[in-house]
Image (tube, rainbow, N blue to C red; front, top):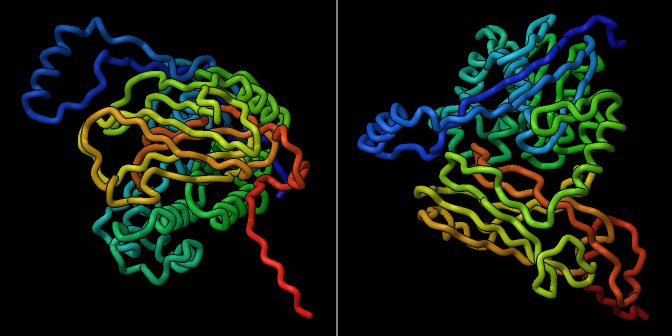
Length: 411
């Protein structure tokens, strides 16, 4: 269906300001809560304003697929929450033509004790679907999610991939005029991510519905959308054709510092506070020889006992192709079933002769299977040619593993 010239979304001068208090820790006892309340009355002046969005303006046409990109904390999710009427803007206005459906946090509303079947009806109702509508789409939802064998199993026993597949399938079968999608492709296997992308393309191109798509995967943004806006610290720094906007964003990624530090303290039980990459010489850096490899070092804090939390490192190409996922729980999951309060340093060795010559991004992640705490691209790094020229020199491909060969004479 051709894209309409009618405006579906018009945002003018949008701004959102939050009041941030001095202390972010949650009270864990009744006594602490009472003390915090008393203290907050005395120290109201310690609160400060934080501008999550500032003077954001853009238009989206009916039937258009529009991308929203930027680093974590740029204001992308705040913008979608305003558009979906979850929160009100502090300044400016937005006009929306048509019914809005949101995939802002896939799986929100799932109850772990209920079965997949029960959660389809529960989550569908929370997303605004009538029971008759859910029934009519039930088979399609199950088929899309590929969870039919486990429909009558409580979702607390689902793997993270199964959980996400079912949650996306429910949300994707809404039929709004405007669909807001926030980072739903961050989890799940590559085949299902491709399936999700195809579903959103179908919604936009075949059904003529408007799609706003937020993702750190620049390949997916480029493939799905024709125009995009690039946000940085709550402001628009680029808007126009997706290819040009993505190019500007990727150029900014190359300017990342070689050592990352969290911008502030969060309320989460676990927070990654520092990240750096260390070369074979033991020095912090962002360029490493292909044959030597490097070490990733993460410092994190556990503020209260936390169960089944993940500390992970991802390596991506600069256009968002996901190459490597690893976590400290990979080798000994039972060791990290319970994290006790304290400060920790975790290190993982990435061997030489794995990544090809080129530029990459290091992404950190912490949280649980159902909730993300930290999820951010923190360091841009480069793999350089080795000084020793071998038969591996100038090979094509993203990865260069040293594979074992065995040859035997057959005559």
